[in-house]
Length: 190
Image (cartoon, rainbow, N blue to C red):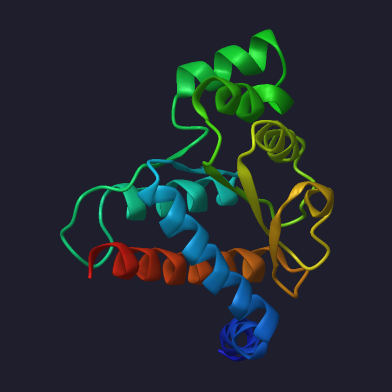
């Protein structure tokens, strides 16, 4: 029982720390405005990550492209890993490090936004996607842990969760992702 409460308290404390961090709250607000502007201009929101972060990326893309709270028109949002045949072919023929960058090169366009999710900030395929995005004038937003790793040099905006515990970072990423989805939906459709 004590261990369960300790884990929940750790998650709660991190969320309270984020709540009190004016820089993170402001960065979320600015990101929402950037996303709304990009969507209104006909651009797309891209997401990528590995493992649990890939699942988070897919979850958030679905919230935008499907619906969150309200029935509304879909928002152009998708992951860079949605096509398994592509992923395995490019991973085999080139390198798994190249799968996201190559997909973005073929499908992204100037003015899109890439949300790159990596708890360490060092996932090679996510970092390469960020490098590719910048070369195409695609805005790069990194959701990371406290150090931001290699994404620190590639991202236009970093939402660094002040933790080095992967599960707590991922929980915070989803909380922030849901806040973003709710606010984007409100600004576009209310």
